Image (cartoon, rainbow, N blue to C red; front, side, top):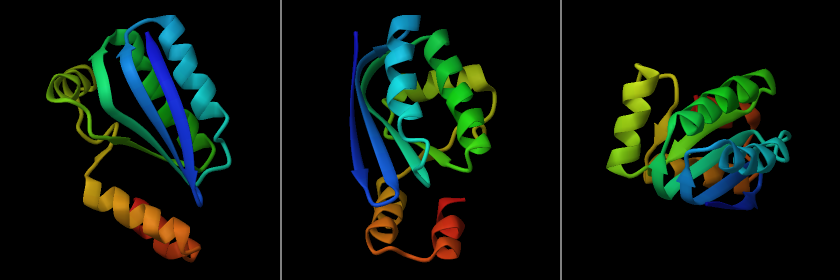
Length: 127
């Protein structure tokens, strides 16, 4: 079971996930939450409470990365458990394909979004 909750902070959408991201039903919940945020400059998928990540979940995250690029939205993953982080790295074979942000970097991005920062500074920090 996967539960998702979305919060918006300025131009940042944070999708907090709780549970497992292992099958198509769970993936569709994540897709629905993410696609509803197509207008965000930054989409953060908070994986703090994701207990397990399967191949369908990995595929969903990589598909969301491609979708975000197409929509000119930055996608960042936040705070996955070590077991989830290992699966991300193992299955994507690249640390760069899905970016995991630290709390400090995420905080900086949210502050910029709240303050209505200019696009070039936001884009520079989000990259």
